[in-house]
Image 1 (cartoon, helix red, strand yellow):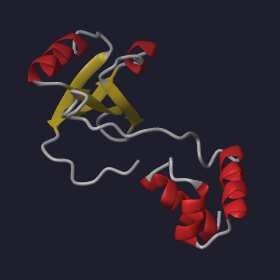
Image 2 (tube, rainbow, N blue to C red; image 1 turned 135 degrees about the vertical axis):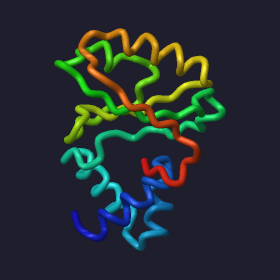
Image 3 (cartoon, helix red, strand yellow; image 1 turned 90 degrees about the vertical axis):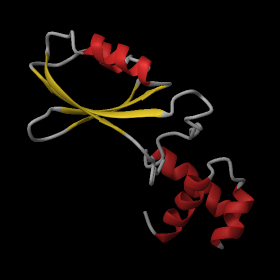
Image 4 (cartoon, rainbow, N blue to C red; image 1 turned 120 degrees about the horizontal axis):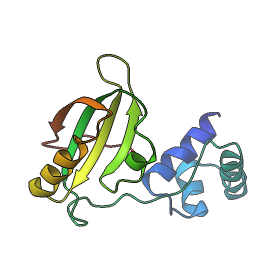
Length: 138
């Protein structure tokens, strides 16, 4: 990657539907070069996919929670398929995982937590409720 790729990626991060001609105008890179570089970035898995960012409030997921989880063993595929769990990271330290979860409200969250903690492979959790989103980069 060089500065041209970085400029193209910056524009795509703002709006991945930006036409190649508009990216060309904003970056000063010829349209054919922008097109070739996007294809190369995709081929080299630098760009994994183009996606959307939803408005959490509009889709009923504006109650955001981060949960640290200490486990006895692998939690399996069940955790990957849960609609409330949006991101999972393995972490170092006292806990094994950090989860980013989204819910419509406190009730939905409480039901999830009660059920989640019934899993025998979970030793303990620490829950943090997000109060304001100061920055989110896609």
